[in-house]
Length: 210
Image (tube, rainbow, N blue to C red; front, side, top):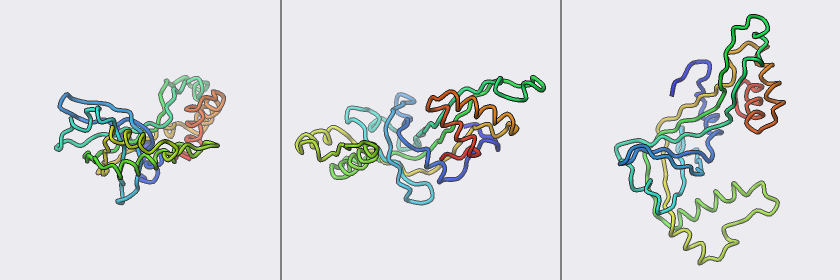
């Protein structure tokens, strides 16, 4: 990933905040393969942590990976187009161009395959609790019949990735003067879509996710 000092984010705790359900990208026998999978992040072992997920047993990703090649896991945060018309500088000199703001984390590590029913049940239970936490009546794994859950667990395989390298890029108008950032924030706040509002918050916070 191309990084410049303006936009590079190196704080592990900040990068960990962005890691949620995003693509798993691996290099297999047939070349690059992208799979979109919800991940669990464990901050241990320090300093970079461990990623865990599960895939369908029929998904070749858990068989077609190379032990000699690290996987790249990409987590995208908000991403929005930035119009030069939002800059105060446009009125002053006209020397402005469009750009695109975004936040992204790249994590690297080797895949370890886990085919263990108890491990898988623990993982899906934790993932379910996390994603159901905002619900007024959260669904739980235990709500389904036990024999049904057993059949579902038999149809999946776990993947664990100890992170060996992590890098982040927070492109959030840090290179623009304050008056231009103010114009971008105002425009994004008025847009009202989720990514625009999230990017406005990043710019207000000096590019650090809240």
